[in-house]
Amino acid sequence: MSLSEVRLAPVSLQQIIAKQYLYKLKGHSGLVFILVVIQMLSILFSLGTRSSMSSSNEFLQVIVNSYSGEIFLIFSFIWMVVVASFLVSQPYQSIEFSVVNNRVTSHLSNILLIFTYAAFAGITSTLMAIPQRVLILMTLEESEFLFGGLQIVPGDLLLGSLVAFLYLLLFGATAYFIQTISLSLSKKLGIILWITLFAFGFGFIRIFAFQIGNLLNFYFRESSLGLFVGKVIGSIILLFGLSILISQRTEVKR
Amino acid sequence: MMDINPKLNKRNKWKNNLLVAGVYFGVLVLLALFAPYLDQSKGFQSPNANGKELLAEAPSNWSGDGWEYHLPEGGRFEDRDGVYKNGTLTYKVEEVNAPQLKIRNIGYTGYEQIYMERKASADGVIEVNTYVAPHYVRTADGKSIDYTKLVAPPRISLEEGILKIEASATDASLDRQRIAFKNFSDNFTVSQFHPEPRNLNEGSSMVMGARGILIRIPSDLEIFDEDASQFSWVNPS
Image (cartoon, rainbow over all chains, first blue to last red; front, side, top):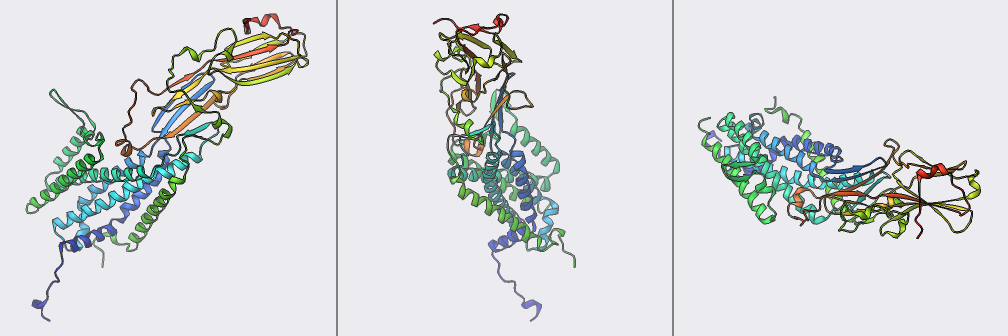
């Protein structure tokens, strides 16, 4: 058989993405392992209180401590931002040299990976509240009283996992977008975007007489689950879409 | 030949990593399946079995500056609703071993009001009753707890004609009683969709009611005159 007779078997886009996804999942498996370690270590931090009230006089001290599992979420959010940034960074992209690849398949397999990580981190960070609560219950001292039960409602675990998954996707998509800009357009622009995100995300925005509030409240203050899901899905489509578009347009330049 | 990505060098490492992640995930999901069977009661849990029985839900409408958290003047403590007798001790007159009974407050016990009542009969028994006015706490999530019955009585002893009243501490390092309440609140990922209507006038607050002692002595027992500053006589009803 001569070289001219060699035919490449037709491979669909989905197959390429699936292969890349599995390849990256294996190649970056250490990132999931790191999350497991982070979550297990953060159980120590979770024994610290979310809010505390205390009153005392010379003969009596009364303390009310409230606990939540938000520390697991916070650590997972940070992990997701770092991981999503890494996926677009030059060293991590070198893994793609050994597979059939173009920008779109690379992005789509990365997005699939971020979805997988978000699902894993969203569920585990929510469920970590169970060992945390059992641990606090088991370490109660004679002078300590737990009230209100463990409050582990299956419906809340499902809701918490879904919402954590969506927040993780949102943070992941944001980090991915900024890192894409940083890599494709300008590093300085990327830094400016990070600073802007922190300022507008956590700070209070006021433009002349218009008080807009901070950006994160657009999601955090949404009490309708349907609207929240819509906002997050809309945002991640926009962020991932822009990431693909920007890197496509700058492909020739680079 | 060298691998392009050194991260992929250890070919079996990904299997271990994903296995760890899978086991971790599986254990948490199993815990979630058992979670509904864990104690979800609205009551109190503590290794202190007696203590948790003494806790109760406080009335929802209490305020931290109400007069009802004082004890009534005159020594008739039990006449007021919500006042709890947290201790009773009795001594026989023979145990006094002195011509007169002396009263000594050692340190600051918190039991500020000490009343003495002479019984109508010479029954030979000294009764020491300790009382506390309501002690309430309201948590940030609106739970109101009555912990009045947990307040420790002072240490009281009768030695060589002296009735000693000392502070009672459960935490030696603090030299005072310590009570801690703990509860769990939802993560913001859940509470965001369950906004609870809350009365803005009701924040978290605490009230520590007054404490008092009523000593009832037989009609024929003499009291050391110079101790008159340590107590007041009960108003005749």
